[in-house]
Image (cartoon, rainbow, N blue to C red; front, side):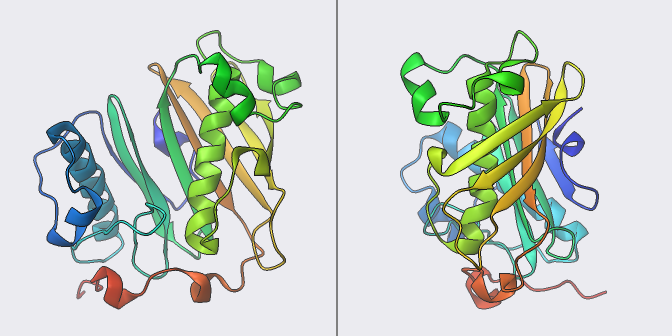
Amino acid sequence: MSLRSVVPAGVLVEESRQDLTTTVFPAEEAGIAGAVPSRRAEFATTRLCARRALARLGFVASAIPVGPSRQPLLPPGIVGSLTHCDGYRGSALCRAQVVPALGVDVEPCRQLPADLRPVVARSDELTGPASTGPDDLDPALLLFSIKESVYKAWNPITGRWLGFHDVRVRTRWRGRRSGDFRADVLIARSAEPAGFDGRFAVQDALLFTAAWSTGGMATLCSTLSHSMSQTGYRAAAR
């Protein structure tokens, strides 16, 4: 089980459990300026994962700059996100025809500090199905990761901030180690996605989540916050 177990069919996942030997492209330096070596290594490895996925989609390797909301600036028509944590680096990308918006997150299984629980969870989210699951998974951490995935899908399309309480999550466990969810965005405007479907899974002390929108985004291409000239990407000759 890995990130592949929670993303929709047609999404390309590249991942590593350790940092790989690679470099940061010059156009990416602004997003990592002043970082310690360990942070540079995870940044570079995660982007190498994304470049591998993009190569499978026919793109020549180039920079993946950091956008104004810290989002990766991907080629037009490509959606997805990058994620990293202790012991994991990965990316999940696809063409917008597969899903119009996609976000992923991976977290080490741990207890969230008590003071963060009301920040992350709405008052009705830590009861019922959300409170069940394996003993090594904090229900508040599950909500945190789901909402991180939703934000990563939401922000590149809308360019807007999304707070934890701006999203209402309903989870459903399918067995003891995985399940699915529905996330409703409470501040969505008429041209923005109001809901996201998703899946989650727990393995090897890691929590994997993915969220995607399946429709309602006819203006997707016109609202993406980058262009081919900004990313420097071009399709590989075939």
